[in-house]
Image 1 (cartoon, rainbow, N blue to C red):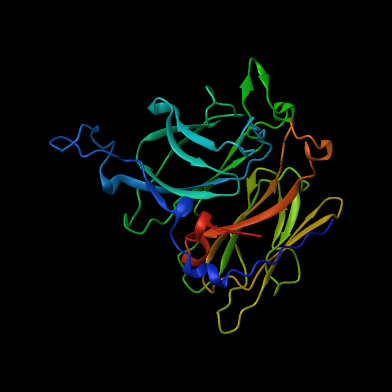
Image 2 (tube, rainbow, N blue to C red):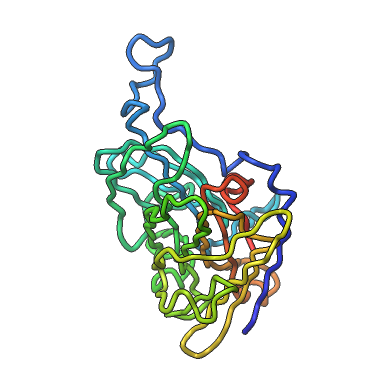
Length: 309
């Protein structure tokens, strides 16, 4: 099956820093002697580390109230070590930048907004390195939320498919080189629709797949891609091929910025709408998507934290 997404995003270059793409400060409080009653900060500003979260999970049950539009709930990342404090709350297909304390163990879980309990395969424990430049908001790692975002009601999962496909954290440390002139890309396989393993082509100037084997819920090594300028833009095809030779293809168009360090996340748009009056729309076929982000302003600072193809 071949799917191709062309998305001209030159106009988005001006739409920097808004909504879920903005850094979120969770180190709140004026500290002792402040004018309010908020608690002291958990750590000093110099100890903060910037983390990017991306919601790649699907299958959240659609809520259909008697009055008002149908909606889906956000997926919350919570701190187990901080009494389920919410780190970030994301809609599917969106990213956010969050600053958390470095040099200490953090334990993260996931739960749907409004749910009383976490629901995932395994908690994520990590120790972050503080940002070298606290003012830059450059993400030292990206954490992808994958699987089916579901909850349990009266002991029963709302979406039965979540039993075999629980939520997963995919932890992706920043492994890009500091060499400014080289355009690099790293790929994350968070799709349940596309097969596993896959090979991935990310450089139109090379003859073979740059990424030979990539398993589901894993991240590739960093490889070289093709960057270009506004004056001479060149689209970058990203082609996934599984063992059955089925292909899923996207085009990063009009270009990857020359010298950019891009993170491309393969995920699905997956709907579970059990109360939909149209039976064909209760669980329609999933659609593969590619989300491209990074510390390059055009890629990572757009509305939603990245560009979706």
